[in-house]
Image (cartoon, rainbow, N blue to C red; front, side, top):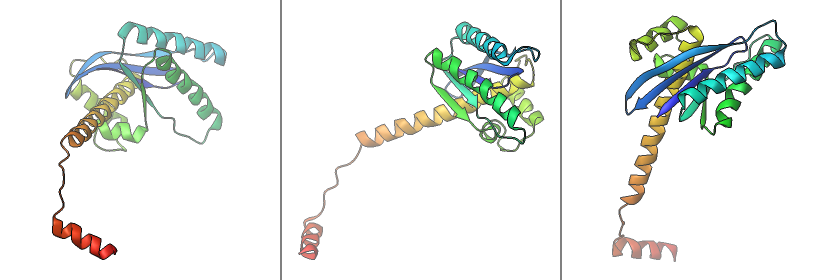
Amino acid sequence: MRVLGIDPGLRNMGWGVIDVAGSRITHVANGVCHSLASDDLAIRLLSLFDQLADVVHTHQPDCAAVEQTFVNKDAVATLKLGQARAVALLVPAQFGLPIGEYAPNAVKKAVVGVGHAAKQQVEHMIKLQLPGARLVGADSVDALAIAICHSHHAQSGARLSDAIQKAAVKRPVVKTSSYRTSTIKKARA
């Protein structure tokens, strides 16, 4: 499975692509889509859209994962981040990819083991899990962490689904004893 992780941002939108085979995770690529602060908002969003579409077209992921937006004190900044996040959701959807969404704390917990880990801890764990990967910047590190988080959740979901299917197939037939059946009938009467 090839996973595209996306860290939404209006100025810098990080992306990271990993391959997952069982418990093995391999780095494919990472980078940052940039927009110019001097451009109009519509032009910036279009630029991010085009750049991210090129990433999807080039790397052909099977699924995508996007970090959820957190609300901060600056409503205007939150709104702009939401618009950039819409681009991050729209591009994979346009390519027909299933998309997972994860809270920042869930991403940190999946990668570091602690939901309130520092950025340096996340970067350290990404370097350990993807040895030899040349990391482009903090935004691409976050995107790779999102991709790894998604791979863990996808694997857990697949294992759960397999277990449920196996349990349904192997469901034993339970025979009640005649004593128990007659006792239940008498109690109801």
